[in-house]
Length: 169
Ligand code: S3P
Image 1 (cartoon, rainbow, N blue to C red):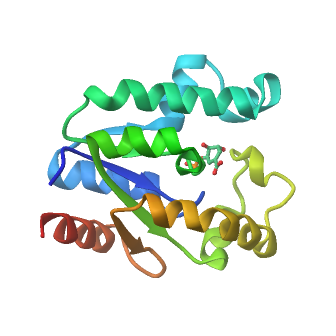
Image 2 (spheres, rainbow, N blue to C red; image 1 turned 90 degrees about the vertical axis):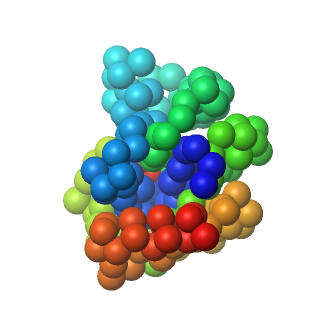
Image 3 (cartoon, helix red, strand yellow; image 1 turned 30 degrees about the vertical axis):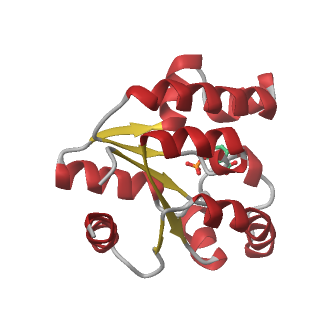
């Protein structure tokens, strides 16, 4: 197994939850990209988008992934937009396995509909919008992934198990 695991996927696919489960289960270190960026900038993702713009946020993601190249034995929960940039995919490939967590648009919407932490979905929290954005992103997720795991109707533990089993083989 390569030394780090990068969890990619759409907002609400379960990246944060599964990263925590992997951390608890196999003692890997845990890093949540959004959380790290918020701490570095001293403000929420929503405020970064509002005050500094999405392009600035995307440059922070790329910079953070460069810094992560030196990490080992870490499970990294990536922001949902990370695989849209080729440089980000290259940086992840250099230091780990990339696992795509998939979920149906209806599942995603049900999971995150009451949250207000994702500027890209503010005012668009409905299945049709999520479906459209997911369709645009799917080729990027799929081509970046070493492994794809569906999360619909599965517990974090079951997903964890599927990931570990596939990566060990
Ligand atoms: C984004 C996903 C968010 C966060 C930002 C942009 C995206 O992370 O990075 O709001 O472009 O899909 P989560 O996928 O952890 O919600």
